[in-house]
Length: 145
Figure 1 (tube, helix red, strand yellow):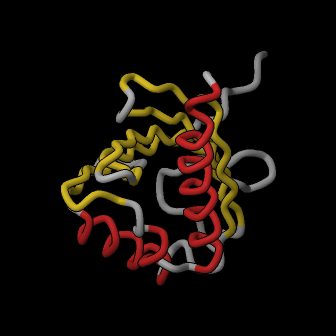
Figure 2: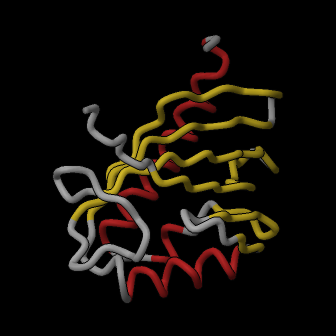
């Protein structure tokens, strides 16, 4: 990335880091802090929700039930700027500590759930916002016979 983008890269990395920290506290408000008012969210089941309020409410419900006490790590695998004010981040996410896994969500051999997040960021009024958040579960490949 060009050096003139270093502030933008740092800002986006900080948002992803803050989301992981918020997840680990079970704090839906903080997890949603940089989600755009008109953003879209697709979860691992393919369900799509629109708007900041729906994103925050869905995560509040998740943190209060299935994801209570879970821990997440999030790391940007690739960040690319498609325009000066639009960036796409591919984020590797691992969540552990589920008392009971959500139905249909695969876990790896360590009972952790891996997912790939694709976050589309837009810069508005000097700040970066997540305008699209797409979550895909990583299904472990079957053992070769």
